[in-house]
Amino acid sequence: MQIQTGEIYGKQTAAKFVMYNVLKVSKSIVTLQNIDNPLSLFETTAQKLQSSGYIRISQTPYIDLVSTTPKKRKAAKKPTRCPLTYDFLEARADSERPAPILTDMFN
Image 1 (cartoon, rainbow, N blue to C red):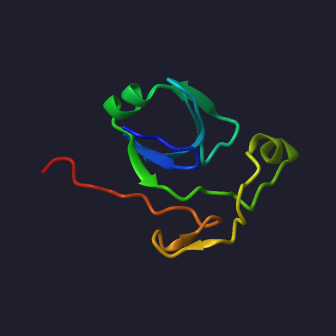
Image 2: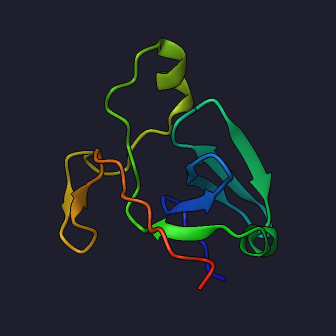
């Protein structure tokens, strides 16, 4: 499983669908940041990510333009491209929240 910085992974929990930005990828460690809570970071491996049920939602990064506190702005990684860049393959701009891919897991 090849993981790149800037991709978005998601997982269906009992309550909701949670999405994470990939902040950093090293030899064996992947650092993820919760999209809804930018101060929430965790590290895992690519194997654990796949075995835990995470799926890739988007290859285009998500950049939140509505940061409300200075802490959130500091925690967010500086964008490498304009947040208003529209990716026609993903059908959204970097500043638009990705639509989760919901699959019927019971069929």
